[in-house]
Image 1: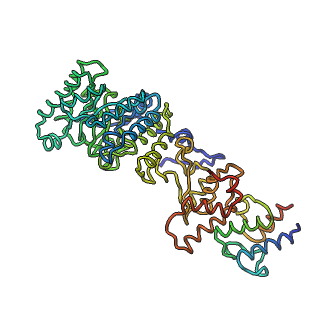
Image 2: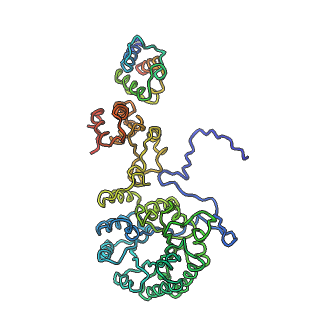
Image 3: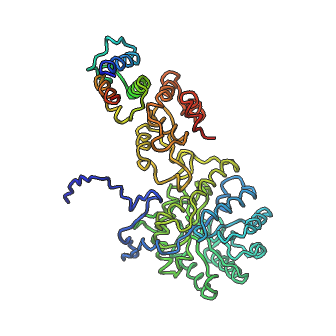
Length: 80
Length: 460
């Protein structure tokens, strides 16, 4: 997958999780500060990404990701 | 000020010499304990306990039974057999005392004897009454405890005697015991509230003179009965409450050897276990206790706690079979019908259950952070987590992984259990729930949210 394809999927999942429009999600958005995620929401988000990409990720690494751009890079790297 | 500098070590120092995890944390001493007696300093060497024959004696079926509905005979026989396995072949649980007064008491002794176990040895308990020796002789017991109250509270106000009359009566019963070939064990009731130099020490010295006339195995034993829990283990506490002073004087001024001294405590001031353990340290060999501390009023030294203390002081198991403690607790709950407090150490339902999410996270990452020792290996009780709104996703992950029996790499991540944690939080935030989530409810959630894992790994 290209980075753009990964980004589209990450943004789509993120928008769905936070009940937002995809156009309102920016790569710079931080999950906790800008999108209002608490710890459980952050975990649910990673679980939703896992499902969308058909991957299982290491939780300590995945939960270190702070923003949408970071999530895109994280899954892009995993898929290479 | 002594300067201390940070030592930024590359690997953790887990202090495993003291916290081996494969055993209860070890109790170590770095010097002698000093005590002032009659204005002079005397010393106790606490490291003696590693070589001295300290052991446990049991009164579950005597004092332990005075505070609860009577046990059925089969209960006592089963517990006696378990006690034997718990104490092991070296007799760490050395003796168990029984009432002799009813037919059921005597039939129970016969049934326990029929098990043909080396330990615990069966002893009796009688009032200081010569007539009661008939019962001891009939049962063929080698040793019996006898009530020899030592405080003026008992002598004057209960027995309506003078000290001289009381002592004369006690001595007559001890002599009757010698004549009957039964070893007497004098239970000095209320000793921590007694006039020690005015009654207890003269009485014990008289007993020692009588013991000079009998062989070693018949010499009088002395049980120090802290009947109201007044005993104090603190160094330099005043007499008669001071445990170290009492033991020191009995050994050094009255000539009673460690192997003939026993501590029997009560928990009226929450000191029952530490007073018992301290009495080992201060120089006597036998600590008398009851299973789960059941005993008159607030109870006696918990026998299972004494066993753990024994291992910690000795630095090894010495034949003790700790998982039997769990077997006994299950027997109390399942068969006898006695509920043990959920937070009761070593056996309560929640003794190694964590509730806080931050603790559950620690437990999940490295069990030793929040588990006192290897409770799975030593007590057959893996650490658990109770699920509430405070236990967090870490807590749910720990519960689910343990429930499914998953190990190592196959253990599920927090992401895999996120749906269950959402259900848990909804219970509290949306449903207004106030109670913990039950194991049954958690199992239902595993079935619903993780059906493939449930089918593959569920416990029967």
